[in-house]
Length: 343
Image (cartoon, rainbow, N blue to C red; front, side):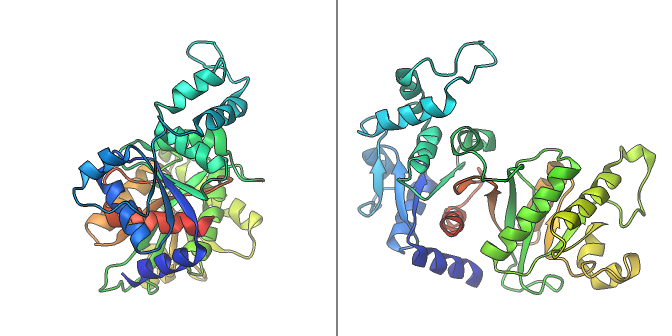
C-alpha cells in the first residue's frame, strides 16, 4: 500500500536502530532480514543466530545485529540498569525485594528477553523496541512501565491502531487512513484517561498517520440519545471525557459522544448532531473501552479489508510498541517503521 511505503521511506531517512526481542519467532526473523535489506531501519535481533537461521532456511541475516543475551558482554551492565531502576520495589506475592542484587537481576533478564530488549533501549543502544509476536501485551508492556517509564507530563500510557483502507478506498474516510484508540491497553478507562487517549491519538494521527485529526468520542449514543440509568453512566462518562479533552486541547477538532455512524457518515451526522464540525467527518475514533475498541478494529481489519498497524503505544519516554500475536511479516515491518518515526 502507498501509505505503508511512505512510512518505510520516512523511516529509512530517519536511520534509527530498533530492537526486536523475539528471535524465536519465524515471522520476526523474516521481518528483521527484510527491514535491513530494504534499509528501513537498523535491527538488533535477540536470539541465537544459528537457531534464527534454522527457522527460515536460506535467510540472509548478514546485515542484522543478532545478539544472544546468554553470551552478550553487556548483560552485566543491563542487569545493573534493571537493579537500579527497580531498587526498593517489593514483590507483592513474596513480600521480598524484586531483585535482591545485580546477580538476581541478571538471572531474570537472561530468561526474559523482552526485558532485555527494554534495557537495550533504556541504555540508548537502540532507538526503539518492538515485541509481542509471541508474547502477551502485558508481557511486552511491563518492561516499558518498569524501566522505560512514561514521558514527562504524561499520565496515561495508551495505544492506537493506524488503519489503512484497502486499495479500493472508502467512501467515508476520504484520506484512506483512520486512527482507532485505545484497542489494546486500557481496559475500562476513566473519563480522564479517555481524554488523554483522545489527545494522544490525535498527536499520533498528525505525527505518524499524516492526517489532520477529527476526533470522535464513541458510544452507543449520540449527544445523549441513548442515555439510560441502566447503562451504568457509560454514556455520561464519554460525554464528560469529550468535554475534558476540549478543555485540555481547545484547538483540536473533537466532539462526542457519537455512535459510529453519526461520527463517519455525513447524512447521519447532520441528522443526529447538526452543527458539529466532527460529526459525519471523523477520522480518529476513540472507543469507550477495550471491548469496543478491540472488536471494532478487528471487524474493520477482517471484514473490511483494512490493514491494522499497531498497536502503536503512546506515552512512553522512549518508543516501545506491541505486536498482535496474529501479526504478519508485513505488520512487523510496518510497526518497526512507525517505531522509528516515533524516536
